[in-house]
Image 1 (tube, rainbow, N blue to C red):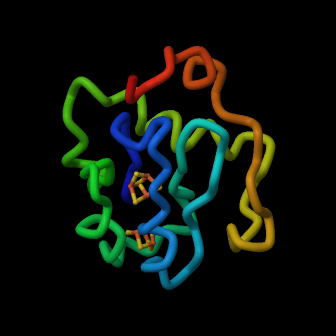
Image 2 (tube, rainbow, N blue to C red; image 1 turned 90 degrees about the vertical axis):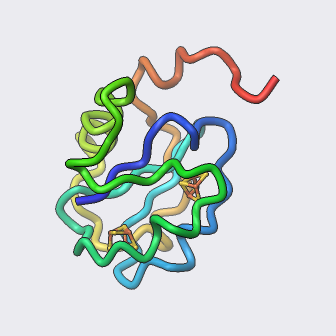
Length: 105
Ligand code: F3S
Ligand code: F3S
């Protein structure tokens, strides 16, 4: 799977959403998350992110390793809806993501 990491926080550019053929990039309040089971590893999202927030799971920089878990934990309650557009924004970021200080200031 691919993982969205720290640079997405409070940026939420969403260019990635338009590229994903399986609609598996879900929106939270602070960032977006890639569904680890629904992502088919096509890689189309990775080059379009203007802040380089997206990484293949093996390439996530060490300092952002927790984000791999965040892209899993975000779906604890949501499960596997099989498509982000019908779900819309889900205000259920992992608590430590909610607690991050505001970015881009
Ligand atoms: Fe975030 Fe980049 Fe997508 S900022 S919403 S991962 S295009
Ligand atoms: Fe979609 Fe990116 Fe995975 S475009 S299928 S989330 S690699």
